[in-house]
Length: 70
Image (cartoon, rainbow, N blue to C red; front, side, top):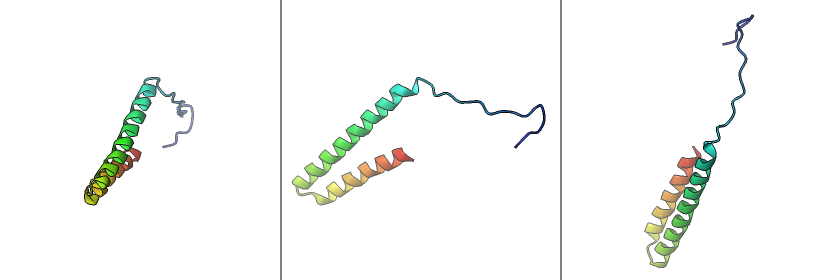
């Protein structure tokens, strides 16, 4: 709601906290580990002759990445 007059508020600049920086590295590391594990799982399942398991592993890995983007 817009205010008019002397009591009008002005939005203040929000500065990012420095505590978020290490968390971003941790999330990046975990996502890279999930990607490597997902690729390894698909390759292992396909080389073992289990295409259904490979599809399930690929779908679960994709769901993790889709969930992290939301």
